[in-house]
Amino acid sequence: MTRRVRAEGKFAKLETHMADEVLPKPEPKEIDEKLALQLRHLAEDAVLKGQPYGDERCDNCLYYLNPDENLSYCWHPKLRILVGGSWWCQWWEKTED
Image (cartoon, rainbow, N blue to C red; front, side, top):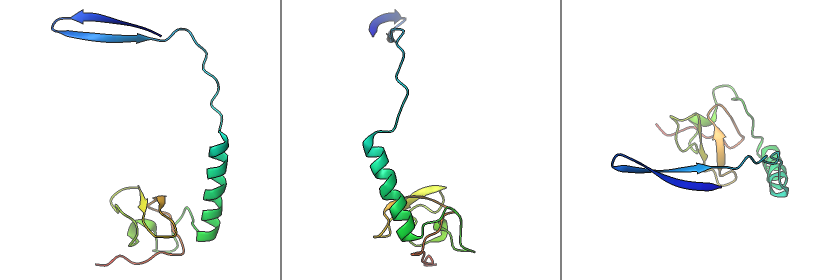
């Protein structure tokens, strides 16, 4: 990698050039496979589904942190993960009005 500074008016601009390198094809690491397995077990244990159960969905659940967002953190003690608003799990609870 080479760097050089070029002056333009009152400002200096740093340019970075990468040599013509071929980057390796990205592959999952051991930690990725471990986490995928843990999340699969969590989904099975929690009956975590990627679609709503009738009118029950994550974005109208008490534990969905930001109901105005499509993805948000679920703070239920047995989950504590990022979930989609249209998802559902067995611990769904109605929000307090």
